[in-house]
Image (cartoon, rainbow, N blue to C red; front, side, top):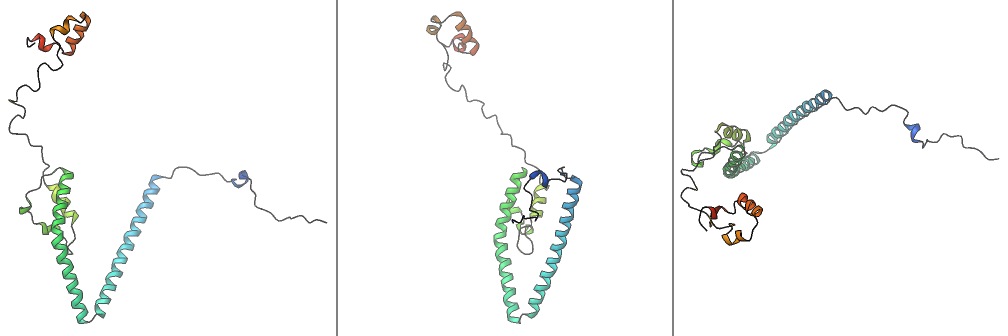
Length: 194
């Protein structure tokens, strides 16, 4: 006698699996905006908590250091700040030029700028100060030349370039002559230059 397997096997019929109606409508933009705002707020909260924990850890490490270790750490921090300040002025000048080029402003001469004011206490660029300074400058207007650039140059090229002669006209029909005249190929001949 053969036994029949009465256990229920998963169905491979695709129509049986989708018995519930699909909700493929576009999500609501207000709900998405609220969700983005919620995650931004959570991210800021986590960032604030991380900064506080990092400060506590730094304070704990400094409290457990010996005087010699503190002096070494202070010297490292001072050297780092000095190096960043030295290179920072070059970075500030480059950033100012880039920002001015993107906004179309004209910078004053670098000799008259205090580039150190665009550096933070840690020697890093203060991009907000740079952008606010550049936006405070008036946009540059293209300078007009002091004189008309093409005045007094005389005729450029020869007057006969592309012009027809009397011998060319003798071989042409009346309609060809009218077409050449409308294209300007007879201008030199009509002025008496040929």
